[in-house]
Length: 263
Ligand code: DGL
Image 1: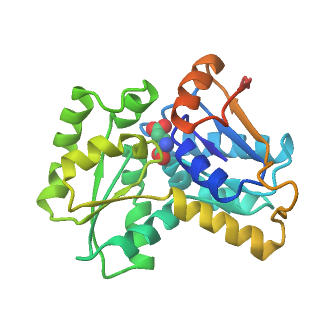
Image 2: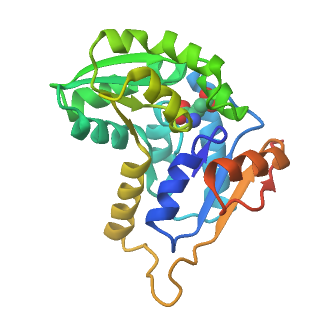
């Protein structure tokens, strides 16, 4: 699985909890983060490069694009170019939001790249045409997470400003369409109020991984070795920083981080 940085760790957490026997290789492209403000073509090229690395060097049996911006930019291309199953986070998030909403009004927040791509709007149209969807790009949120600032006054003020159109639209569900945002859940929940349900794609994505492993017969059998999956973390940026902040955000599985240098 991969993300531009730490955000995909929200999906890694769900995956490790649900499938403790599976080996996980997580690539955080912190040397080139953030992806959100970049042109989609560039994110597509990065995604292809990382997928090749995971398939060829780490011999993975499936790739989870644990980044909404990369899912929006590259999912179709990756599915076309690689033989292993490739799963993104957009459709799983939409499914989770559709089952959570009571009034059919869903807010979606994400990076400029994700929201601008129209990928969420398209996914809602095909999976739940009756839903009313209000989207808002939230530039700045990812940077707060990457600095480890998830509960500061500044992020609260920014959230109040960026989320106000969604509040005005009366959404009862807020889909966190960026894998970094669950780390801001307390702040986002405070701002939206307790009647609004926050939904992320992490759990739903992990369930889909389990289904695909089941359907393709590639899941690892639990038994005496149950809970023995190996977890490998690779970063293209400062590995010490990745280890420190990553273990704080993910938990005890993140002990060591391998360095990767792009040419
Ligand atoms: N975690 C990412 C996403 O889900 C990318 C954030 C970024 O690098 O801007 O979109």
